[in-house]
Image (tube, rainbow, N blue to C red):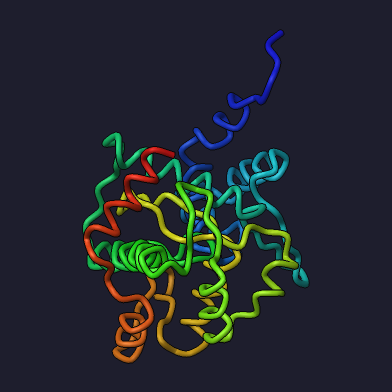
Amino acid sequence: MKEGPDIAQIGSLIGDPARANMLTALTGGKALTATELAGTAGITLQTASSHLSKLEAGGLIAQRKQGRHRYFTLADDDVGLMIEGLMGFAAYRGFTRHRTGPKDPALRKARVCYNHLAGDYGVRMLDSLVAEEVIAGVGDKLQLTPSGEGKMTALGIDLPALVRSRRPVCRACLDWSERRSHLSGSLGQALLTLFLDKGWARREPDSRAVRFTGTGEKEFARLFPLPAPSAVERHDQHTVEA
């Protein structure tokens, strides 16, 4: 008998097309009903219920009850990072599904990845924070610098609350469309919440896309200026070497 982690079990759970579609839908961060997930997967409600039971038993999703309704979410951040990472790996290796439509450019520009900002804007935000030495680190090992703590506090981010959450404050997440890292962790979630609460951005209905307002575009550019190419290259090199 082989010993060690059983990746085959996880692979079989994710590998079914219907379950993969449902997990991808849940990376939008919203709690969805079994009926909504069945529609996403293109299967009957009865079949969806069977798939959801398997995903829940495998620890990939969690169930929430509100009155007579049941909602499903990804179990935790690690599941979201795993799914986004697999999407990035699939895109890099050429395993893509081509869908035309006006939402595609919006998704590539800015979208929700479970609970944080992804897409071109998510990658730009991390590049800018690294270039300004707000965040330091190599590869996935990121942390706020002392000056970074001051900047986040000035923005109204409750850093002690982020530390108390026991989740990583800063974490790199592979972006499937940009094929580079964006910022996740509790800080990534707090920054996306900040953008939404201030009205600088809004979620597109029935989509993972995030649309920035005119004011939001200006504020985002002010807070996260484009770094010099040399800084981006250094960050990319660190990521590759890690």
